[in-house]
Length: 399
Image 1 (spheres, rainbow, N blue to C red):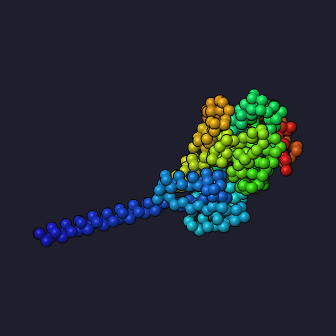
Image 2 (image 1 turned 90 degrees about the horizontal axis):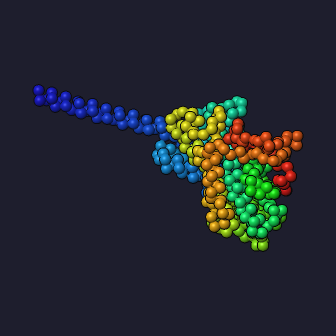
Image 3 (image 1 turned 30 degrees about the vertical axis):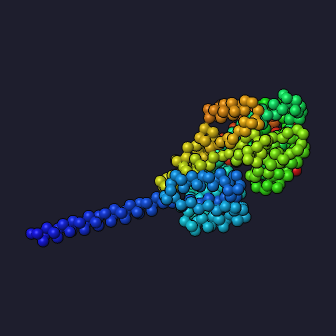
């Protein structure tokens, strides 16, 4: 009896050990099931403000999900070399690829079609809902025109202050803009900025010069200096380096020139001339996309935004757009209040940016015109900006 009891006890112990081993194997398998790999394709690195905002998001993935998610980042990828980067990420076993530059769009969509089991999210493009619609191909972008409009309000208050103090006359209210390319995204941005300035300075005029590159410090700085030489009292930019800010800070012109930045604070580079900056916060979308992949669900189900098919956008109301470091030592009195009130109004849907006593012409089709007295709703159909009209008589494009 004693031997039988011992034998049965040993059997029970063995069964318990086996059960525990099976549970441990199941636990590990389940953990392996939720483990995903996320890849990023960036056109710059930490030194490039635009790309650094995506790198910040990639680090947030690691902070939020830890070992559940492996992150692979490919930096400094040119449009010409992006196919190699996508191939690398596919071969590395990525379940989700975040493609960050407009110029990657064709390749991103191609790889989404070739690899239907990989989710590919393309920032700034507008082709996710075009035929054929690919279930695993997505577009996303923050409504950055909101931030540019508020930046314009801050610039307008500063110009008004300069006029009120007799530093310049209303006729000298000239704004310069360093734009990367004549894309709708850039045109929409500088138009929103202009509309903000014009709320306080109706006499304002703008000169735009294109760099035809996203991130050349020397070209951006040189163009900003040209605009300063032409008499601009505010310089803003849709380009990725500190060149324009440095040009403003180093100007020895008798009439001061102030700077409005993009993607990062410029206070360290232009402490006496920078006013404010704005940026898109990509993190809310990217964390939503990661969670969706972990749950093996549709990405748009996990993104808190305006969703149109496979396209997602949002602004201040979801923290997808942010203002960065208003320089209280330089900005005009009342700037903080104006900024905060306008952000609040954007959140309530009470701001109509593209509305006013202006007409515009499509630079690619002179027969396509717009009357802003009828208004224009940006991002009504896609997350990528669609406003592509040069305002007649008040905005000049110079080569």
